[in-house]
Image (cartoon, rainbow, N blue to C red):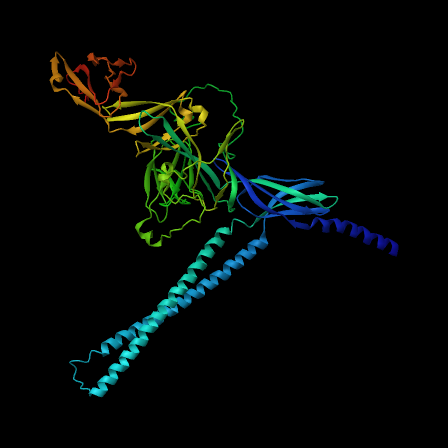
Length: 624
């Protein structure tokens, strides 16, 4: 081959090789999490930093990134005279290998310490046996052996000296075992942290760039993580029925993405990036004859039954992963995710569910609308293994059981929150930075406190429950941007239990049930002198009358809605007549009678409802 041709080929090869070498240039960019937008399910993380991009093609690498990323959500932006050619995510195998080696070294060290502890415990047993022998040898009285005084003294001196040595050795070994156990506990905690990091901070985001010259630039990146979210809870406080209603709106934020959100700006969005954003389309509706011999499953109503969502936690409020949530009497169910969250679709309210997890006592719950928090108690066999973890100063994580979260005031003064209205969602921007650990535990952020002018009214249906329930009606409630959530009720300083606030089911007036008030007495009793049964030919006629008593023991006047009902005939053989309900208003369709009552303080009033039912004498009706 001609030397000039060969030299030219070498140059051509080098010319192609040089750009390949340039593509392999890797630059690590130091970034920090600056802010997060937490959705009802998921969160968008925003990082920023600066980096010097060399000339040519480079890989700008952001390491220590969560493995819980929605890959299509990754966005990277850089300023200056450069081009971003591609963005992606991959696992950092070098970090993973280093992590595995570190775990292995700690496991070997832990096992070595355990071996020392076992050896020292064996030595302790030997010394205890020697102690027992020395004590027994001192009991020489009553034996046939006769010792001279000098021999007896020498024997006792020896035994006493040796016993002191043995006891000293035992104390020394016990101290050594205690120190070794402390050292082992530290290693176990390190291993727990490292094992938690196996699937957390070993990923990296990369951006392939091309620049004509070196560029010093600001870098911003964002991505969506799935193992995060928030849900609202409320505390409703009523000082008395003459005062406005106070409502505290709390956000319960959690995340186990693998990244610690340290002193970051937090925004809470009512959106959910995991929902289907495709608009529905109506298909043609064809009518066909049905074969009665074939059993058909009816199509569910549009949207079906509401999905049930909840969280399984332990008695400290920490999430329980892989807990089973089963519809009782069936094999249908789901398991909770790493954050204890579970979702069941098309569950009819009132369905009984069984929640269970290994090491915890099973619990039955009733499906209701909204978000459920299900605390499980440790089983008796697992109580010996409970480890109580504390929180560092400045943490806002709650160590209380979740069933008490909605009634706990975390701060005496709420932080400043800006509400931002977007086309399909509402966002609450929290002014104060927060630190949220990647441990899945709930962090309570107070979003707002509002004072609402409310109209208070009592409701009583003594046929069902001889109690008066206080209700509150709030107009113009839409301006407070409330979401559906559990509400803890505090009335006159006492915790009354929980209710559920569902703005989607409300009209122009928000109605809240605040629970029973023992200061209002309600009774219903059968009036015997009106009770009679007559035979009229082939029919019999039963007459019933009930006295309804309401008494206001409170020091202020109240308004009360009292309801009872008249029976409805379902056959032409049944007749309902002789009805009386003085002062009440009858709903002709439901036959419900309503009295609107104003009661002064310490006042009592009585009302009567009466009816007669005629039906065939050979039939039986349930009238009580």
